[in-house]
Image 1 (tube, rainbow, N blue to C red):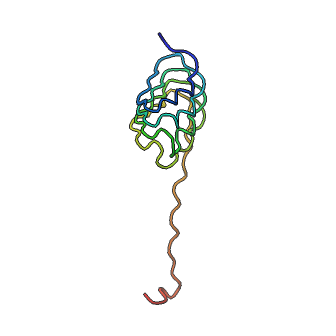
Image 2: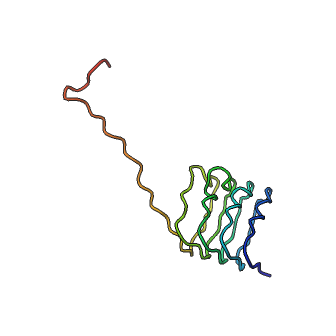
Image 3: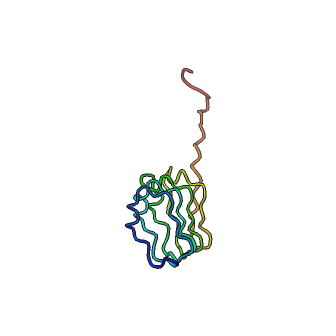
Length: 130
C-alpha cells in the first residue's frame, strides 16, 4: 500500500527517529520546515519519487537545529522548484549523500571570495623601524 497526502509537520516530534524512508509514494504538498528542529537524530531522509512541491525549506540548511545528524537526503523525482536557499556555515556537516535530480531546482552562483588588497609601499620603500 502506498501512502498518499501531505507530510504532517507533527512527525517532527519523533526526536529519536534515525531513518525516515517514504520513497515512491503519492505524497504531495511542501516539505515541512518543522522537520529541521524536530529530528535531531535523523541520519536518513528519503522522500524521493513523490509529488512534493515548493523548494527546500531554508530551516533545513540552518546551522542550529537544521538536521545536524543527516547523512543521506534523497529528494529526487519530485516537483520541487525554485532557488535553493543558502546554507549556513556548518549546516548539514554530516551529509554524505544528496539526491536532488529530476526536479526544477536552481542554485545561485556564489561570488568568488574577495581578494586581499595588494600591499603598497611609498616611493622611498619601507619607512620606520623594522
